[in-house]
Image: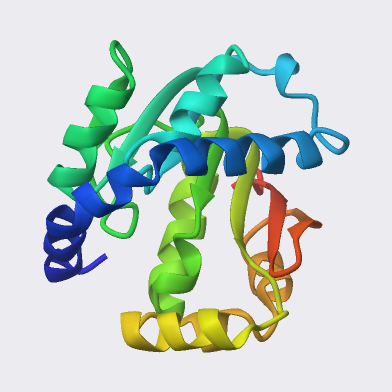
Length: 198
């Protein structure tokens, strides 16, 4: 993620902070929907890449996982630390490389990160998340179903939403050994990706 984007997200972090409770409920529902495909109790460690204010981190910890949050925006991490006392948060960019060894985590998550990156940045993200993850990389993001409101918001944000949603599963299949998509809302899916062996 470009530095100026990280700066923007640091600036607007307090706005995201107001929606922390809503986001926690939303992520709880998403993980409950995905649990029919993946038993989270079988895993111990996870990383949330692009953790923002830490709502998903909070839900993952309640599931018994040892969670590390990562975000390039300092402002987001400050709020995440306040919301999740005692949890580890690291300022880093998945596109530039994460400060973790190979296969450091059982599971990794990225929620609504991929669509904001261009295709080359997404490839770097998939490769890096596959590198640090033993079992599953879970991408929670948009599916192919568009809505006028989301289309306008994403156009204003200037990410790569319109290219990403053309066929996100196919794009991920180029980077992972296997990809399953579970719809977790009318316009969202949890993409469950198995890292390649190398």
